[in-house]
Length: 106
Picture (tube, one colour):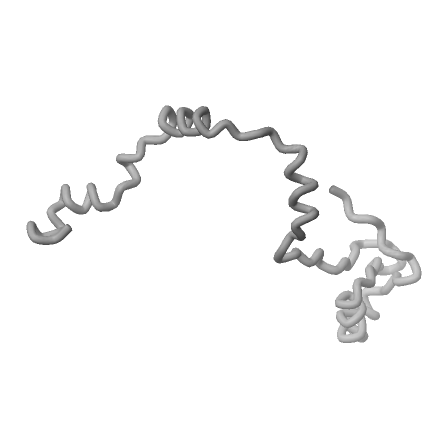
């Protein structure tokens, strides 16, 4: 995914970036974009970070879910049983095998 070019009205020189950094950072927080130049040549862009949303609305979730394939629980369980060895992930079996627990525990 490419980032759109910054607005050329926000073109700043390296010197501006150094001398007006607080002002430029405030602009970034407001969503402004900057094209940075050195000796008149475009060398980079300052763009605000995309904010991640913490929650998705019920309507958005429903809309995305409509396009998802239905999950067949039996086939899913069969795939899991075929590809995952549950014995490897049971910490208690390993602990008992090393006799980390006494006979009266567990």
